[in-house]
Image 1 (cartoon, rainbow, N blue to C red):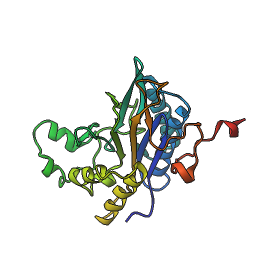
Image 2: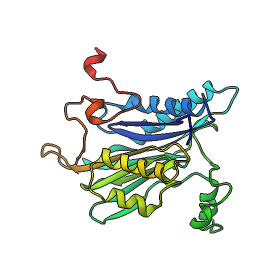
Image 3: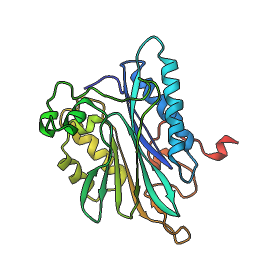
Length: 263
């Protein structure tokens, strides 16, 4: 229903994220794009550390504040990065704002929300003053307590989780979670379609349910890695030659350049 898309995404290893901008025309859309541009600098790394991501947050925050000296602009950021701990693959989840990260476990057949919203209603729920059902109708349900670029230093949260074959990670803006229940999301995640088809199906359902806000979804699947890389996981759809083809691998914003093109 919105004419302007203030969401942006990055879908290139080792970092995958969604960003939901705030501030309206030439503010929210610019803020989310600036965040994606900074995190895109990790492209080509085999794994990242929290310090790498924190540097991206700090540079993005500085650029957003510098861009909007006379008006307010900011963005949420929620994502997952590939991390290595003692030769074992881990999901490094990060979040600021109310975009979310979920994990679907193929073994347990269970959808878990990993990230925790930085919002007024989340704080009320944490304090036992509000139920989840009441939070869905609360007049301040869209009021954030943290966002990138709106305060001083960014304050993202991080989680480090062992990655297992069969894991499926969903990153989404609140345009998805405001329209679909956890049960509806779980049903689509469990359907067996590939990552791109699953993401498209989720967005399509959210639009059919009302589509009151921009809706972005990124799905990342994990499979057993090659024998010469024990403990690591291979990502579905990620090209092994390091090259990314938008027509095959999916659109990426901004589009990463191949090393050959950089020379």
